[in-house]
Length: 624
Image (cartoon, rainbow, N blue to C red; front, side):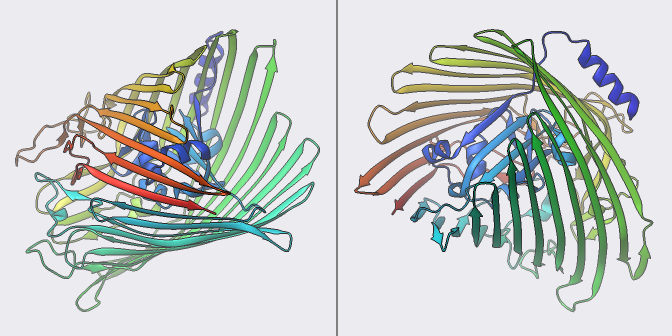
């Protein structure tokens, strides 16, 4: 490990003047307000290199992205992003390239950092109602004000999404076959309060969320409940800023069941599954220096029982203690140079892992895993219109207890444990340049990531389908990313981003995988957005999105021996949006008409999903 870090740092020091930090993109609340997305994933899919790798967020061909919300990790799943209302977001920061130096194990390919809107003293009330052509709908209410010198903000939502997953005709996963329309319901709210003076800010927050996902099968659905209280504080003493955050989280999946309705495909087990965690982060900032401590403990319980008679089939209890220490320093020199040096030490302790399987109780030995991930970056303002930048960093991803020991046996679907999994490690290099001119700018970045002991989930079709996470071997992802923003006329703007990504498995225990591409990583991804704002308080936008074909597993087969398709074809979509703001005294009404997939282009999205086609959405928002 130390040799790997030394080689990265040595390479960085030899690169000379072409170095700078990897690109960061900030999306403001005002920009989200202009784009009026129904969800944050709809917003982020239009950003360069960012995609959905079979349910996991990915950047530049790397399917390990950290999602942080108000200072705490939420993993990297799209489902976590869907829990956040667009109207609650203050900023979204997209960090491309390895970010484990600050955000830990989930950030091999980058990070998405979301800050939500905090309580304000102004009295405001906003109501939002949206509908679409699939009979989906969402209702949101946001209010803020001050009570006795304490600022308060409350936000609530109730929504229903129909056909949130559509069965593809040629799915290789028979166990996922649907017999009816699927739907996804969500309801919950957030309440925040804060107190501020010249040197101190303290506050509290409570999040509550209920979700129900029906998977298109009779009696086959999950019911999720999340309760998340938080405390936060910030103290300011001149140039020194100290902040601390504490969060308790209770996640529960109350039911997972299917008691019939499809011959030979019945998912006959039910939960519950629970996870309780405590997270603490403290951080100090002084001038160009920052340092902090992250501590978390998670306790998880999984139970599987027959839906018919309650017979116990499998159970697992586990505890993971995690501690992280991070620090960084930024230095300006020679007027136009900037150096960033940072790193993070992570330690994971696995304890209390007990298994009940096939009538036998067992206890796994405690395990200990650790890693240190540095990052160095250097930028040079070469000319008034040209900046060169790049970075080098390492990443680390340990397996979780569920991946190591969880087993699931159904008539047509089997999940196998793998207690021999090794941690995944990565090295990332970025080289970039930014050119600006009157009315526009362009960025070009070359990126490279190499993994050792890459962890991936392998799925084989048949009866039953079998899924297991394995160390695939050594892999690499490299490519180019281009973004251009240009004002064409006073009221017309073109924003374009294109990502070329090539991936390759370079070493593997299975020789059939060597030389193949990674799954769910398109070689070409393009977004082109044309925005017109020539009419006061009216915005019109066209968004073109293209992704090239992508394999769905690591054999890189178009079809397997049974004739099932494992290759998603290329697709292109065109989205249209028009928004109008009407001001009435101090109040306003916002009207939105959106047509996603305007050309009704049907395409496959994953192993068992296809796009629902053209969707027309209308939204009205009223602000008092």
